Structure formats: C-alpha cells, structure tokens
Length: 281
Ligand SMILES: Nc1ncnc2c1ncn2[C@@H]1O[C@H](COP(=O)(O)OP(=O)(O)OP(=O)(O)O)[C@@H](O)[C@H]1O
Ligand SMILES: CC(C)(CO)[C@@H](O)C(=O)[O-]
Ligand code: BAL
Image (tube, rainbow, N blue to C red; front, side, top):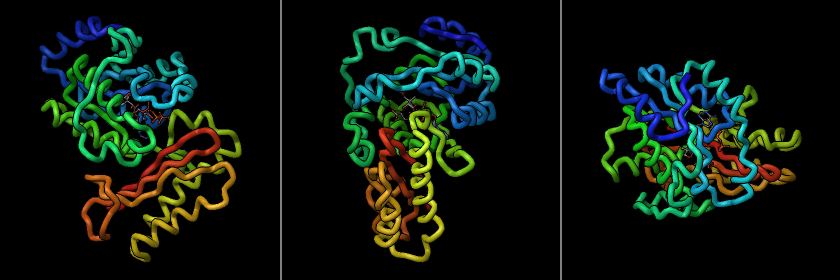
C-alpha cells in the first residue's frame, strides 16, 4: 500500500493507471477507522480497480474547536487496517497541502435549502466546509467513483448537490450503515463515550427502529412524538432533533405516501454528539 502526503506524488502514481483505463475509487475519511470505513473500502473494491482512501481531519467543517482538537488520530492503527483491507493507496496530506493560503480560504457555493436544515442548523457552515474539502479531494484524485456512508445522510445529499454545481463526472455510491451488534452505528466519535454513555447511546438506534417497526401503526405526528419520548428522562442525553423527513429535500414529511422517507436523529450523549438515521422507504 502506497502512502502519499502530497497531491503531486498522488497524481504521479495515478497517471499511468488512468492511462491504462483503470477505474479509480476514492474513499474520503477523517481517519480513526472502524469497520464502517472498511465496508466502504470493500464496496469500492467491487466498483473499481484502484482504491485511494484519504485521511484528513478537515478544519473547515468543524464548528466547535474542541471537537476538532479532540478528534481521534490513531494513524498507525488506521494504516494497518487499510493495508489489511487491501487498499491501494492512502492520501494523508497536512493542512498546508490542502489549504496553501490557510484554512480561512474563501469558499461558498449554493447547496440548496437542505444545507440549512438538521445538521446545517446545529453546525452552521458545516456543509460549506465539507464540500470545500471534498471538491479539493476530487480534484486531487479525479476518481471515477467515490464512496460515502449513509450514516451521514445529509452529507451525501450535499455532495451530490456540489457535483451537480460543478458538473463533475463522478459516480457517488452510498454505503449502508454498519452497526455494532447492539445497534449503535459505528462512528469514530464513539471512542469518547463513557460506559454509561455507551448504554445510553442505544436510544438513537432504538428510537429509529421504533419508527421502522411501527410505521403502519401510527400517524407521522404520533410516530415522531413517540420516538422523541424515548429521550425523556435519560440523564446525560440531550436530543437535538428527531425527524421523519423527505429523503430528497430533508423537509419534514407531509404525508406517509411520499416516495422517499427517512427518520433522522442527532443527540448529545454525555459530551459526544451522535447522529443516526434509518430509511423508511
Ligand atoms: N457506521 C458506518 N457505516 C458506514 N459508513 C460509515 C459509518 N461511519 C462513518 N461512515 C462513513 O465513512 C466516511 C468517513 O467518515 P468519518 O471519517 O467522518 O467517520 P465517522 O465514523 O462518521 O466519524 P465521525 O465521528 O466524524 O462521525 C463517511 O462517508 C461516513 O459516512
Ligand atoms: C467526507 C469527509 C471525509 C470530508 O472531510 C467527512 O465529512 C467525513 O468523514 O464524513
Ligand atoms: N462524519 C461527518 C464528519 C463530521 O462529523 O464532521
């Protein structure tokens, strides 16, 4: 497995592969890898010949400096996991390489109204930062396909909007959420959960599963209020939002007959903010 710290060395590696018509996949990550990330690598291998995983903790998408500061960075562990998974190359630039003029580099594109909902409301400007770095990664790799996890449901939508904005010829593949045996969605931030938090964290997947299991039993309003009541009286858990939304617009669903419906949740468990979702249809 090759390791690249600069765009130039990465480009030099990819150029002959592209010339011989090899299909390139990019798996963007912020490191602290778990089996959710590895599932993206495995799906990439089914869809391309050469797999590049990027590891870059992107400062411009963090709205809370403490969150950025404490983001886990176990790089040796990450490289071992990627080598084991058969990844072709890892792109791990530093901040200067991606932001030569500084992380305050200007960026603003129209991502549509969904930018301002849900995560966009709680992490203002987050998706400008995400699309800024993903555009830079796309420019550096020029992949045929790029893999993203459904766990970050809104992120996938925003990246598709960014692709449309720049008319980039890249196929986005959305990968299913990989969960722990008890239902908690795998996430790099789970490492910050205390033993009590870890128990409490199950409320996210349980409340979502309730909506899936009882979709035909209640109205949308009842489903939402019953799901929200899962969060009542759990000490140390603070619900940011629980919504049943249209999967294209992320606006609250108006009818159970809509085509794309998804239940999405974000909650602070102890000092760790977690997100999760389940597609209803
Ligand atoms: N449990 C999971 N299953 C499938 N894909 C996942 C899972 N968790 C993260 N991903 C995907 O992996 C990619 C990289 O995500 P990232 O490095 O931010 O990890 P993360 O676990 O989501 O960390 P964070 O704690 O920052 O949310 C994203 O496309 C994300 O959606
Ligand atoms: C896509 C991404 C790697 C951009 O920094 C990040 O938002 C993530 O890990 O989901
Ligand atoms: N996994 C999404 C990246 C973030 O939380 O900043």
